[in-house]
Each structure stands twice: as structure tokens, then as C-alpha cells.
Picture 1: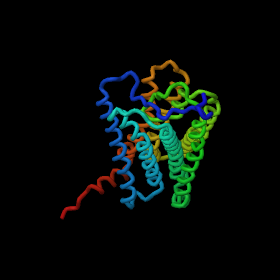
Picture 2 (picture 1 turned 90 degrees about the horizontal axis):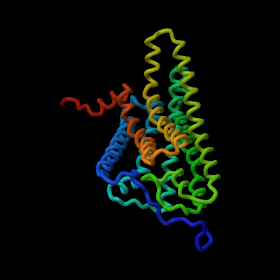
Picture 3 (picture 1 turned 180 degrees about the vertical axis):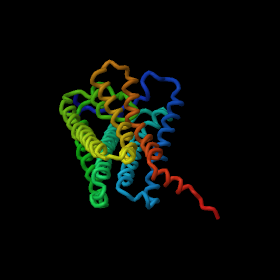
Picture 4 (picture 1 turned 90 degrees about the vertical axis):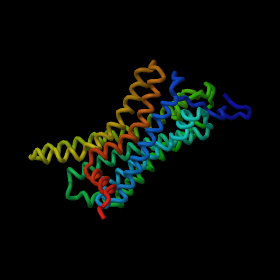
Length: 314
């Protein structure tokens, strides 16, 4: 469908949806989202401040954790405006271009998180399999280069998406199924040939999630082989314990992605609330859980927290 000037028709605004089928109790839902945002932001800001403040945490593992915390803040901030306006102020319209910008940042931060989790698995691989070279392999310059490389890859993979969406006409209405903008959701209301969008979207997912998850599994296979070669049971448990926080973070990130993909592919008749709930879990749970996981499972983080709040006696 073309507009009056021959350009693809695009609505001035798109209508966001809170949770399909739920018309009452929105105040409680808004409260839940506010609590999730608060926990996520306080937790991740706390991790960033703690790593900056505590010299004992100036190590590669915690630098990567800082990247994860900073990225999780980005995930939360990218969804915050429309989620809060939808649930708290009943203002559920967003400009078309603003929607494209939000879509870009949500997916970019998600791809970046996958890359950071891969970098953290390589950090654990070097620490366990080649501990004597740990400090020389993961220097400050290399850590910075890895971080910039992850960000560049995510930005480059997502950069075409807004333009691919922008070229499409929208003739199936302007109602989206979430309280934020996602590429698959926009494709449901677009008309015309969306094959390029779908093919490039599949390529981007394989290039990021697919590659990252494969190398994460490979790194842990090599870690497990190295740990099993250690004769001391105590040393084996100690080595595996240093990986538990990262394993929990990987599961918190990838399990919702796998669940969303499985439901989308094999349960197309699922009620809309199922798709929305799983998407919310995918976007809101990892940023909230990651600082909790590392605070509970990492002894150095716990010591840093206690030291930060400890006030010496006069």
C-alpha cells in the first residue's frame, strides 16, 4: 500500500498493548514492573560502583561483569519509557520512528549481552585451563578490545533493521502485541514482501545467538575436561564453583530465548498472553537476576559489599 505521494504507507503512531486479555488489575501489574526495574537498576548500578570502588575486584572477570551490568542497564532503560507510560499512565501510543529507535536498542543490547556472556565464558576457560597466563592473556587493552568488538558486532548486525522496516507499508493495523517495539511484532502488522526482513533476521540471530551459544558450550566442554583431569576432588569443586555464577547467568538469558523460539515455531496457536509473558521474561528477568546471582554466588562480590557498607568504629 502506498501513500498519496507514492511512498509506503506508515502510521504516524503505533499502539502498544499491555497484557492481552487483562483489563483489570493493571495497577498491580504496573507495580510489579516498577519493582523489577528498581531491582535491576539498583543491582546493576551497585555492581558497577562496587567494581570501580573496590581494588580487589579490578580483575578481568569483574571487568566483564561490569560490561554485563552496564548492558543490563541499557536493556532496562530501552524498554522503560513505553512500559511505564503503558501501564502507569495508560498512554499506549508511540511514534513510528520512535518505535524503530526503541526496536534497534532493545535488540542491540540483547545481542550485546550474548557476546558478553561468551567473553565471560572465555575468561573462565583461560582462568581454569591456563591459569599461569591468565593475567598476560586478558590484559586491560585486550578486554577493552573485546568489549568494543562485541558492541561493534551488535551495532553492525542491527543497523540495517530500521531501514528494512522503514521500506515496508503497514496495512494490517497499527496495534502491536507488547508494551515495547520488537522486530517480529512489527512484521505482523507489515504488508508487502517481508522475506528480506525474515531472512536477514534469521542471519542476525544465527550470527549472534547461534555462534555465541556454540562457543559457550565448547568452552565449558573444554573446562569440564580440564577439571576432570584434576586428581583432587576439592580442587575440582573449587574450579567448578568459580563458574556457577556465569552458568546461572547463561541459563537466565538463553532459556527464555529458547522458550520464546520454541513457542513461536511449534505452538503458533498459543494464546497471545503466553507469547507476551515469555517475551517479558526474556527482557526483564536476566537484568534483574544477574546482579543477584553474582552477589550471592561470588565470594569476592559479597566481601566487597560488606566492606562497602562497613563503617569502622571510631
